[in-house]
Amino acid sequence: MERAEEIIADVYRQITEIQSRGRQPEKVIMLPELWQLVNNYRQSLGILDGPHPDYLSEDTLFGLEIWYGKNPGIRVE
Image (tube, rainbow, N blue to C red; front, side, top):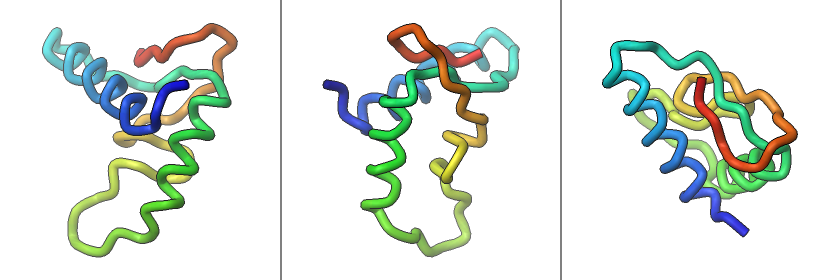
């Protein structure tokens, strides 16, 4: 089983790869079970105070909308 931190790191890695090619990612596609791991992690963190935008919200990761897929793995498109 993957950990939420690994999922978040993989998404960030894919985002930076896409941006390095001059493109802007639009969405993250993953199994609902993986997103649930991330969402449980987010809830365990509680509310973060400060002027910085949160990279993890109820339905986005790094500002990208989460889409549920049926294939294993995580894709940033």
